[in-house]
Amino acid sequence: MILKNLLPVAYMNKKSKTTEKTAVKKYGGALLEPYNREACEVCGRCLMECPVMGLSEAEAKKEMTAMREGRPGRRVLENCETCMACNLVCPNGANPMMLFQQRFYEEHQRAGLPEWSQYFQPHEPGNFRADMIAQHTPAEKKLLAKWTDMSPCEEFAYAGCNICSAPYLTQAKFLQDLNIRGSVDYCCGEMYFRTGMLDQLRQTAARLNLYFEKLGASRMMVLCTAGYNIFTNVLPRYGLETNMEITSYLPWLWQKLESGEIEVKKPLDMTVTIQESCHAKVIGPEYYELPRKIAEKLGCKVKEMRHSKECAYCCGIGGGFPAKKNYHPLAITRATLRAVYEADRAGSDAVMAYCAGCFVSFSAGLAVYPTRKPVFHVFEMVQMAAGETPKRFNTARGRQFLFGVMKKQMPKALSRKHFPAPDISVEP
Image (cartoon, rainbow, N blue to C red):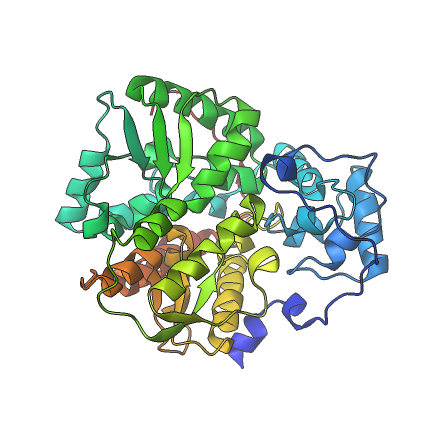
């Protein structure tokens, strides 16, 4: 009963009625172009079909009008997780999320950030990732030190913040030949993008420009779906300047399996439900179908959640993205349990995540959710099918994550203190 009460009311809503007009389907950079005020008809469909809010037509039109007029609005600033689903369902391709993101930015400029949000600011001392890294094994810390290599190279695999939070995931044989580079000091800025911290996003782009200039590479494969979307479709709009060829690891992994270079020696013979990356829906169907093809290639049967693919829920961290929530621990907990609850209801043997961030969020959620359903990263599942035994630190890491929130964030949850959004220097 306690868990049920923690779930957002929107989860219980019936699917909203929508207009008959077919949505303009577009993916990639086009989906993240600025809000098109002239194209928007204020039909409310973006907020009616939002997987989190699911407003009535009257509520949706009222809220959208407020957003367009620059008034605070009630629901978007409190509940929008910037999952980008609204851009997909807009019948005119107006990209309403970009309007919501702008209102987030204005709210941060007006009110600053609450004290409790410091724990989730990517470059603040003692943040949640720094806490996690401090508890890594000696072998993992050695990996992170190796990845900070700044010597010039022709190509590399980018380890963003999410992979740096779980570096043991890269210790599979099929990843051993990759030249992995990166650190939390050079995160892509995904969290700044989703929370509307646009000045910090520009500063992130400036820092990455210098980083990539030092490496001098011509090709980069990103080991994170969020990072791939941010590097290719977002950061170029905020000042990223690079001629590198940027690819994602998922097509690479699928090709390795399809060609037999990674041999499936022990088919997994299990059912899995897939936790979607919010960014996959932007990249498009060919991309978010890849994890499903990989799972089937490994011997799994896929059972979809009620909300999946383009209408999927965020893994939970998105619950802290709304401008009025600013990473409040209860908001993140509530959203994480919502995702875990839905995954549990799918009736599969396990959850598969292809985003290391989703993997960490689910691990934290399962630490308090009353089920024994395991969550695997896609790298771990490929390892198992290839006859390897992956290291499984995620349960302990999930508990460590929760402990950090309880110890360092919860005591500030009632604080009324605010601070200005921190600037990011070009050099770490």
